[in-house]
Image: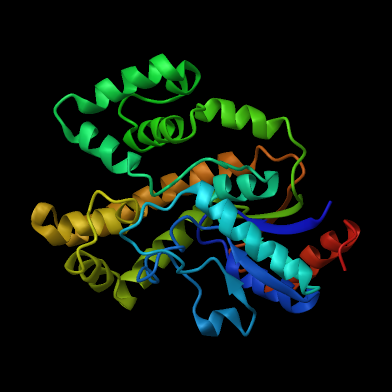
Length: 314
């Protein structure tokens, strides 16, 4: 089974920098696993690596979708797998870097939705139904009828996942629960050798998140969000639900105060980091690297390299 190096962890922990350093050491290329960095014109708020930060290392799965699109995990697996296989064919090492655990797990498992057609029109029709008065409640009850297993796991107000579950069922004839069971019954496509990053002290992580949000604002995040709105990207679309974009869009369209929106972004980012930690800690095979507030980066790279060599990677 081919081995994928995976660098994961909560936001603002330096995954990109470590991924680049390991790629330089191991003849590697980076495959991003970030559900929002896939969108074009959203570089600042998603912390998409700049050319300078990439240091000449090829990066894949960045800015591959229009922000008006509703990108999906099914599409990510299809496109990222093609990147991984191409990297292997060229004799190089794929290094998956990102904080979207769902994308990472689905890629490594080889989860497929072979009959799923993301552009079938089902999503738009379901969104229209959900927008009607009481529409989301009716859709949740429908999900209870066709896929009670999924409905039991979802809050009745979780519009995104309710729509997703119904969309898969309508387009494939199978429930998303059945897709997941079939995937679990198959051996994984890739063996993940996982390095997970977080700060030893939780407050250091939160401080770093706050600093990053301030840096994003200084770099022009408000202008980036305004440009998306001016270009007609809908506020209810998937791209504009990203942390930072949703809160600033509300403020910029007259529904709030910009300074308060920035504090909301920091709060939502901290909450997201906690969810990321919960997700990644479910993996007992992950090698956790606990960062100090003033981390020695060379030591981190060496410890990561030693771990990978122990796992048989060059």
